[in-house]
Image (tube, rainbow, N blue to C red):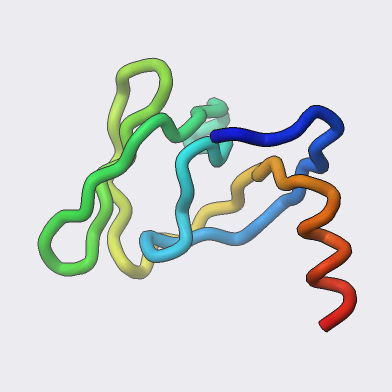
Length: 80
């Protein structure tokens, strides 16, 4: 994930369709960073974390993630 220095961390709700590489999620009280992901049957996604562990998200799984975004992206969102 290429993010400029001075990026802003947002808390975002994610599901199997909106999860992104670099998202930091909390599962079972532990923080994991999404390194890679693969689409599976039935709209599921297998997340691969920086630690090497995996997690499969069903289409109905909802998680909260910390996501780094460039500050300019926030300005564009506010102008809409």
